[in-house]
Image (cartoon, rainbow, N blue to C red; front, top):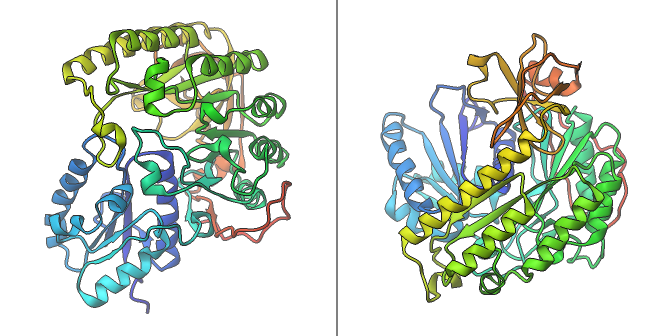
Length: 489
């Protein structure tokens, strides 16, 4: 009997999509090592907190959660707590100093060490802290247990070469490292072979992809190649950077049927002066020019963005320029953030830090404007037929209202009339009957319902799993089929 047999785990994830995908890797590693996912409502033998350092008060949230776990651990001898992710990379040994009941601390570059560190901590009866400064193993070479039967994350790169003054990600994730195209496509193929209909290509800056192996146009080529994989119905990607955004990507999006007409492109500010201090590498005119070209090629494209309000030195005139760009761009939606200092970033030491009340007032004006635009854009879709990939857990009030939820091809959330036999992972068509600021409603009868392998797997409680896809030579094209791991239930 192995030391991990009959031991259970739970991974709690905070932060961005990259962290969500890293947590799938952590689950895959633990299951390969003999752990089993803890049943809902039961305490786990191992709790892993996969942390984020970007959000405000991230450290307070971590230590609050660790405080709640302490009495649980005291009541369960042998329970272990592990902390990983960006905050672990940043704070290192201070986590154990502040929370000595933590057993393992590991960083963003050594995710694959978790099972060994847990074993070592258990054997030595003391905390194990292992933070390395550079990537040891590309995360995609590790096994993964996927959260969804119908949609999967596929990382094309890790790290970032940009030097945005507000961002700590490069310090915690390191310089950009690109996967070879054949490896990316092999992972996509492995997911599709298990019934997955949709993949999202992930990177801190996806359209800088290929710089490491000096292949211009590599991202556009990757989109086209992925689009040739039979059975893959939807391709999304996040996030591109306006500085590197090129017209060949727009052409690939428009000409590849599987690529969704959805673009999430961070703006951050509409002011050229603020963009310069942010060290973003583009200006307002370039950003709006990209949007114009995207809409010329794909009039139905839904464009979303990120915006920071109250960056150091932002004047009333600067903020008005942001409002002007938002009004001109007519984003489908926007993730808006109030600037707050991040230790370790150059912006934290800049002059002109703004009072909280000024930032809050601007934030409320921005969100009011964007909500007004989002509502108008969604109302304009009433009467339109939409194809939905039925989702799980996206509508908190669906059960009360007899509805289900799904995502349209442009990424909008649609709550539709529930029908017996429709399952997450199936595909339906329906007509939009109402538009709200943050979602659409389709209360009529379904026009069609297509049962899928993803729906079958989800109904059976099966989730895709992928063995690690190694690093190979930089070639474009759909690879030969790879041997697959059995699906996990």
